Image (cartoon, rainbow, N blue to C red):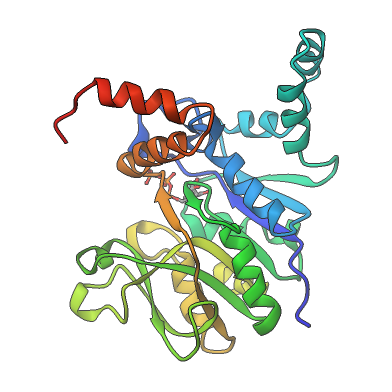
Length: 292
Ligand code: UTP
């Protein structure tokens, strides 16, 4: 049995420049898909997968994320007094238990790899999950839970992947596929933003990882890569020489809510799934008589 994955890391220190001016004073991870912040989707997915320790790598202007995962006494009291018990129960259910959330700061946004490295002391020498909160999934069970099932069989490192149109491979990290089924196949290589002719497959790394702690040492040694940032993929490319990486082509699909199109699409799709909104939203959209 591989070591159990108890800890998840959420890097939330990026500048979110694609969403300016919304993200000038507010973190991108607090943008909402319908009525839930992006970070809440990632935390819920981690909890469903059995995670007990939630590590947030934050930066300047991100205090509101810490507040979001704290108890709000005044609000709870007001909801109670007004008899809004459903809302109150939901708030309480979503809150990590006391001591389950840890926060550390990435002092400069030096890239995703650097943000992950900043979590090393809080994670310690154990495997951990890594969830990029701007990637929101429609998947049941959640993507991390599907990956945990593969991890229990294989151990090592696990990466969630999804198919992308061939023309778009150059926007993503792409994996090479070795033997094994969709639920757990051997990853043979990883390439960051390859030209379509050089891509080893059309399977892209969509923001969910289970990683072994040896990644921290590699991230610490690394110099800045593409875009002047410390890249996670560079460290994983080194780690794959000595450790197994398993790919999980999960059931479900991702919405890249770090991009405006992904974010807008997710809002429509998730709202159309909500029993309290779907009927009304459909009527409103039809009434607009959009020429789509
Ligand atoms: P992105 O590259 O999508 O986020 O990083 P960004 O840099 O904030 O966005 P743009 O491109 O400027 O619009 C994916 C995740 O990694 C975090 C981000 O907060 C996001 O959740 N990240 C990125 C960090 O924590 N630190 C960094 O230095 C970079």
